[in-house]
Length: 493
Image (cartoon, rainbow, N blue to C red; front, side, top):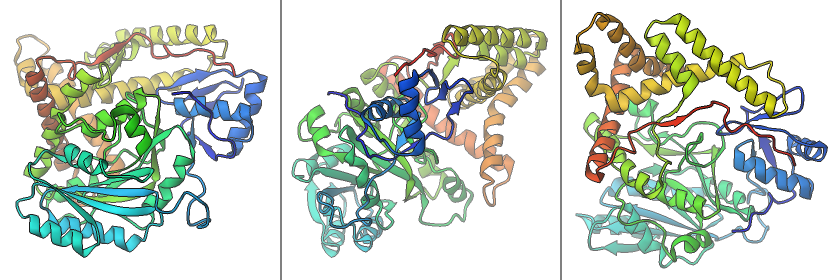
């Protein structure tokens, strides 16, 4: 696919985490990089900072920066702003796969009907071999949805593929039956497709439905597994938002046809088929975006059994995804200097920790100097790197190494107590920080931490199970980088 700029006239916004240094260099994006602009590039960037792509030079720079996560295109020309605009009415077919769950389907379709989306041409319900097909058919008929029926249960991927074979609209929206669609969510997102390179866009998935009564309900409401956060992003593996779930996702049909004919989902993947689809679109040169300004509710599991079973199931897809997309499923990216510093701190070796931090500082200083920019404000980002490495190592430990910690602590030696304190700090730091940020109603820090560790361990067990079946550990093994600022290069415009 030929890369074109973000269209002139498009509105854009600067990523909130970008830092513009006094010498005019720009640091940010995901993963973070340093950009140096020549005078023409600085002029184009000033247009982007004003919020509008106003020239061909700004168009090209906007594409480069959007691909890097430095700026984010803003949804354009919404239908409610100008209902007479051509190409915005009846351009989306909504596909809802379901197996039984007729009550959830009724709530979902009722939300779609109530919202009166101008862009929606048709709603298609795919019954994936329900035990009670009459109940599903009655709900579809009640809401005027077209019904397709599969005789053999194959999961959401094959169900969506069946519907895609008969879709003729330029856009298609996938929606899970346990979603609670708000008014105008499709209309609000359709404007993104004024970008000709955009293949898909998704809203933020937040907890919806029942208000928690049990601990499991309160936990799943406070920590919805499909919530990708409140910051906009260009979707890319190993970045801030590395995938999108098809619980609610709008795609350009032409992009699907380009990568896989009239259908798109890999039917050999029972789970992770949405991740695989998004990554194949990216590999083909398309762009995919996450827009958290639009939110859609998702009904979360009500009990521990269903919650942990779902997390285990999600984990089983990691090894197969790694086989299809090598190097993109790394559960942890470890950078030499901060990992060494964290390890020394956990081992209670402060002098060694200071030495490794100093080595990292010297390496970053040299990289910035070679890139032709100042390096007088390194302490804060490097300290943040050490902090986030500590939390990342802890999360990896709770997901993949928790069952092995008792064996580690049982090893003979005079530092058994130190090992215990280090392990405790690793696995509890992330849940406690999360509790302080979320402040979940009705859950104290102890029960929250136990719940988080159970949730992480269930996912990790799924990854281990999938890895055992695939006979490799690439989805468990962390990846390694020698330099924190290894991608720092001057980027003239």
